Image 1 (spheres, one colour):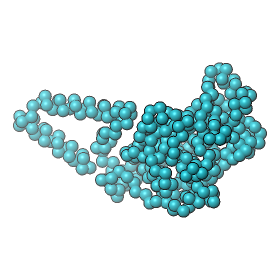
Image 2 (image 1 turned 120 degrees about the vertical axis):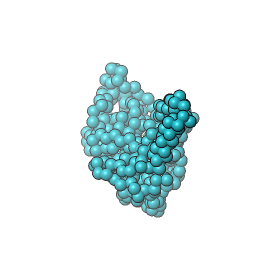
Image 3 (image 1 turned 90 degrees about the vertical axis):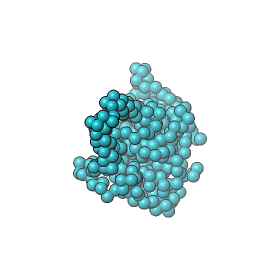
Image 4 (image 1 turned 45 degrees about the horizontal axis):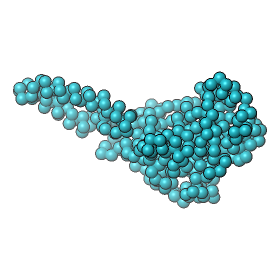
Length: 113
Length: 226
């Protein structure tokens, strides 16, 4: 299991009901969003009741710079990166969210097939 | 009237005749009624809490016609009443294998009309779907795992659920913006619940398929206990 398969998550997606909301770091601008590991719904802060940003037909552009959040160098954010994330730290202080760690959905299931 | 409804009507007529002729005492009718009401109340509770799938009221209904998403009536009179399955043909396996091997990134359209496009962290929706053919014990929450790991069979199962959802049969539907989430009761085991939650509960069997789509485009699908 590589480091890129580990994700820090802040809850379960209310759209698909099972996907963890992982903290996804844009490979170009470095912004971090909450992204469902199952259905790719994206929120730019902890207001998860708001309408999410949904993927387009084939891509999921970063809401800040437009680079792909699906493809490398986008990645699940490291602990050190999320420790500096302002919106998350605010939400953590107010007790709105909790950060947990788990395994992300396989990136390349065919390699194990 | 369906066959089961005809049988029910015949049974009620027999009981009325029995009471009138004095063959059956009224208290027996009351007792049978109480047992029937108790069963109907207990059936959904057992299904929710223990996953025991006993026939309910909906199984007695004739279901002569259903509505699709636009409210159009769908005539199900041609569908076989002896089986609840919607038969779908197996998709082109070679196309699926090419996508899984990474030698093709083309949009795959299933025989049921669902489109699997590029996208997701896995790179293609077919790859994303196949990530649900093995357990990930450390994945947070419920991770639905299909019993079959054959891509053609998994795609055919998703097609079956999609067609069943469109006919509005045994399906709960939720919508937000462009996205539609169907929970389709397949009325048979299709997989189990893995992940952290499923492994804590000894991997319970799943009979429902959750299907997330935008129009005819698949986002994800996996076994679930709703």
